[in-house]
Every structure is written in C-alpha cells, then in structure tokens.
Length: 457
Image (cartoon, rainbow, N blue to C red):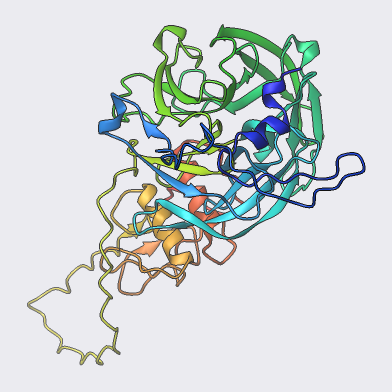
C-alpha cells in the first residue's frame, strides 16, 4: 500500500494548520488545534516562501498564488478549463477517495485576461470517485479522468452534460500495472497530435492509449503502449503541453507535475509526442512538503499555466508565448453617438460628369470581432469582455458586439445575424469565444446546420 498517498498523510502535510480529531474508542475529542513546529519551544518559525520558478526559467516567468478555491471539498486533484466556458475551472476534490468529485468555480480576470482569483463558491459538477491529477477533454467533448487507488488504476469518462461517470475502464488488462496519475491529449501542432497519453504514478511509465468510439457516446481503450519511463518514485501527476515559442523552450515540450518530487518538470518531446528522459529540467520548485503538485492545464485565453496542489491551492504562471505577456489592452474610446443623417438634397442632373461608382462595403470575416482584418485570440477576448459588461476595443466602423451584424455605415459581418455570435443562437456568450479559440487551434468546431463557418468572408 502506498501509505504516502493516504488521506491521513495528506492531513499531516498541512504544517501549522488546524487538525481535527474525532471519536477514538469511547473517548470523543470534539475538536482541537495542533501546531506542528520544528523544535518544540524554540520560538517562532519563518513562513514558507512558497513555490518558485527554477533557473534558467526564472528570468522569463512569474508565479502567483490564487489561493484556496472556496467550496472545493478537500482540494485539490487535477483541474481543467470547463468546455464551453473559459471563465470556469473544473477542480478535483477529495482526490484518491470514493467521495471524489469535480467542482466548477468561476474565475476573475484582469484587463489583459489573466486569471486573478475566484468568484463565488464552487459547486459540485461531476461525481469522480478516486479522481487524481489527470483531467482532460477528448473527442466529442467527453471528459477523461484518471482514477487512483492503492490497488489498481482506472480511467473514467463523463459525457457532456452528465453529472456522473458514464464509463470506467480497467487499465490493468491493457498492461498498465500501476495506477495512473495524469492523462491528456496531445494538442494540434505537436508531434503525436491527437493521441491520448497517460502517466503512471508509482512506476513513472508513460503510455499511449488507443481509443475508439463505443457507440454510446464514450470510448473504448483498445490498447496501451508503454513508450518511456520517467523515473520510478517521481509521482507522475497532471501534465500540459507548452505553447510553442515560449521563452526557454526551443523544442516542443510538456510540463509534468511530480507529486513525490515536489516539482513541476519540463521535458522535450520526441517525434511521437513522448518525453525524452534525458531532457528533464525542473521548471517549478513546489516548496516541499506543503505544495505537492497534482493538476496542470494551460488557460486557452492567455496561455498562462494553471496548476493545483494536493494541499488545497491553485497557482498561475505567466510568461508563455501567445497572450501570456500581451500589450495591455487600452480602454476603448467610446464611439461618437450616431445622429440622424440629414436629408440629402438631390444634385441637379449633369451630362458632363458621370455618376461615381460606389465602393462596396467591406466585409468582416466571421470571428474577427475587432475588425482588424485578422482572427486571433484577441477576438475571443473581445467577446468575453463584452459578455461580462467590460469595454471592448474595435476598429472604427466595426459593428457593435451583440448588435446587427451588418452596420449600415460600416463593414458587413458575414454568416451571422448578431455580430460576435459564432454558433448562430442569436446571442453572444462565452461559448462563442471558445469556438474562436478552437478554430484557431484547428480543433473541431461543431456549429448547427446552416450556420456559416468561422473565417467565412
């Protein structure tokens, strides 16, 4: 039995935190607080410095503690961004326990879109017994979950809209001898794109899992191929693939949470999307023993790296390529109020001057929310800012977000009646921004029949 991972060990890892004890035999101790300090009676102890970015990455990246997500019971297992709403995180609670579940909680963002904290309290979203560090959306927007216990490993699947685990796959018959810690799909643009990868917690084995649709909205795991060993005893947990072009990452790479090692490590990838063992470098020093990293995901709006720890906190790392260090978005200058146009007095007929040819009204590609001629992640951010009532920055003459797609005096929006509405449901919400991001990442964008594709001009 891996006693290191028991719930009791987890409780004791909270140095300087309240510990609650209950009935033992006939004696019930209602509750009391114990301060665990090094050297009893030796006076005060310096506070922990918290996680830090390791050299040589420390010159390009910064780390912020977002704190404890309120409402997540016994936080934290793995985490991901909720499909359909990039302003909501799914975070595992009661990890490695039969009471495990995924909780949904909203996030706050600054003017550049970076996550700065949580909003409200988390709510129970999905039953996820024995949830561990692996949480990822796969084909059909099915949520794949790694399930750990001391005896064996499982892989759970939850269909969109479901609040329960719809399918559980026993990995042992496929040759995965030890319980999984993390799992994830290789993104488009990386070697091995689309493959499902899995890391085994105890022995450090890294697998490629082949999947096939089972006809019921979930997937069979048809085979597991052990590709490489990342080192026994490291405690492989969640992992996430580094945005290309990020400082310090010259090759396609992956970040891996190592629970036992109390670090997040960086690995270059081979041609199949698997880590190269000789390239391991420490990226985050997770302040042992209080910050054992578990979950890992990149924010689709900013490319910031979010990670959770076993002891209840969530952190964010900024500095990655993309919108991780953008130029601050200026406050939009309000457009002048449009007044009624004066009636045009007809000009007298002239035989000497031909009527000028009218220049056609330019069109805006569907998804170009700021009308700058390109579809980028900033267009998704325009949609999100509009959706929460913040000002947006658009080119002069651009149709108003949420208004008619064709402005009489400006460019014509294509394939939509409401400007900024990607899925043709006649409103602008966070789902529309997510569709833009999926389109940019070359992920499938499932629009209803008759709805024009993003990028249409």
